[in-house]
Length: 344
Ligand code: UDP
Image 1 (tube, protein in one colour):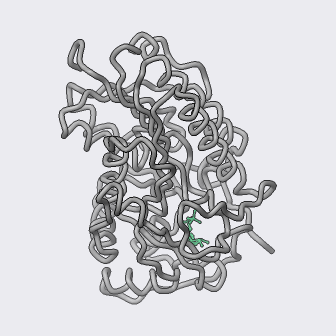
Image 2 (cartoon, rainbow, N blue to C red):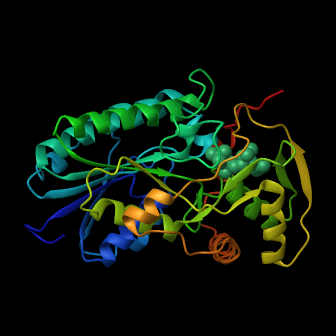
């Protein structure tokens, strides 16, 4: 790491989106200090990053006091990205208390660090703040339909509270704050066993197993390739427009889960077996971002069509499976034991 240079801190930098963000920052010449508790991150994501001299990794959980090595850097830290939190429904529901504390207490610690160091702060929030939406597509002005007592609430309400805190710091002139609401993102570096639909379907297809369709497959999502999401986060952080409010970062091309399977079949050039499973509790029926704000204010829009993103993701999972280093549910029983709560 360059002595005396400015630092970008990425909490959750070993995770799926975080690792792509760290790489993009390193490619831009930044010094990157990555904090991660490795709870849901893949250690393998760090391999490529650790090849850079300007990258430093500290194993640390943001629900706990920040490590001394971080606090000693306050004068140098100019950007703080907070991506630290389990983000797939299976994994964030596995330890709901830790999830909500990560969102609220972890964000609070990082906001204080931003205040003390004068760093600009970006919170990665989520489309889950809209819950099971009654307004479609979802603009940032929509206040959402979230159950505060259901199994998803630890994440949804945690992120809503984190947003509240971030905007209070901004209103109080204590920190320069950006908030991204990230919609379903996919791509290389996902965990094979994180339970999300794209990683599940690709890994099931590659293992010759039937694809697990939850409910009737008519629920919709809008999937954004990870490089597009990272581009949106970088633009948001570097925007000099500090009065943006929350910004949706997602791909507005919406499709049903059944249509997602059809696209995957085309990409993989084969028909895939399917099996029905119950719909999880509070599973949103539809989701599509309104990205007018990101387009008008950041000049951002996603560029990767689903078919090419899926092809790159399938190729990556194939390579990982061959290398035998990605944890599969069989190889990580703790994660495999986690089951999403399903509606009867
Ligand atoms: N889903 C599915 N099969 C799976 C995993 C998920 O049909 O093996 C459905 C899930 O019920 C949801 C959608 O796919 O409607 C997206 O789920 P994911 O966990 O990827 O993210 P979410 O948008 O629910 O946070």
